[in-house]
Image 1: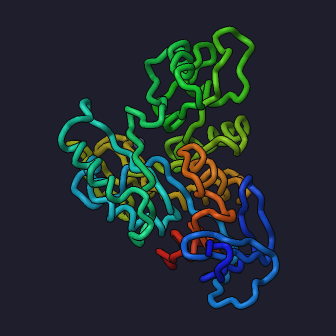
Image 2 (image 1 turned 90 degrees about the vertical axis):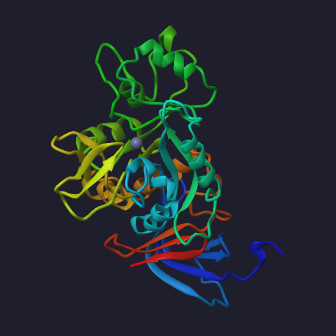
Image 3 (image 1 turned 60 degrees about the horizontal axis):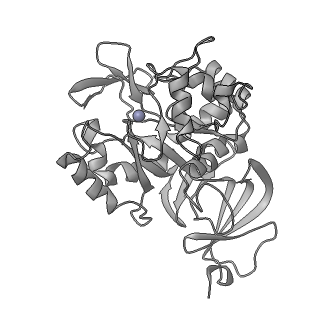
Length: 353
Ligand SMILES: [Zn+2]
């Protein structure tokens, strides 16, 4: 007996549901779950319902492609060596899946790195930890999926040559940060902002890259994000946290590879101690959702698309990032004020307000 022919174990009744492609379906809408899978989405109340959870808004869980961990050891560089700490804290911030961002040392065959990969291997893909799901590793600097970033030194032709190396779209890491823009000498930002390239020989056969951008409103100014969304629309942008910590204590300090970082006064970013240099973010995907809707005037379903559906596509995470039949039941329940009230991973409620 396959999942679709069994009686649903849980039904969620929502006033509004975000469906794939940025569609908002108004309700009531009934989403049926059998074990860890969404099996039905309908406007008519299914008969013989055992367990009904009511909510105002239902969205897919958010997928963070770029997060350095939230703690659990003494130094940011080791946070992912204790994955349980970070994974257990992500659902309260709306994240149901993530890639562990690891800054690789010069030689990736160093014993510490190999030990870390070994440890993470046992956790990757597990939906039974009671927290978010670690879907894979995002190695900063050396991309496992080919990616570009930190291009301060690269010329236009070097970037175009790099883009030509892959038959699939490449991925740009945190667009704008450590990337250059110039009106005569294009850098990664120019490439990222364009969806159609000029009819010039050097641009033939270039596949537009996908990209991610930090949504804490500190690493990139809201006006710049508005320009980006105006230029690229909502189909190809993935928002990320690039988080290295969460704190509600301004002035708290942590170490990052021998340097001291301090929590900013608004608890949104980490600064290099004694300077105003940004060293990472402290926001959750939920904070970014609120930023997109409240500050950047992005419609709710399109904001969700850039936090769930687009990241799933970029990271080739099949059956994730959408409320659709046969997708894994990773979902977020919100009240009418967009307050997160519950987070579900693989059909189980892993966090509740
Ligand atoms: Zn990073």
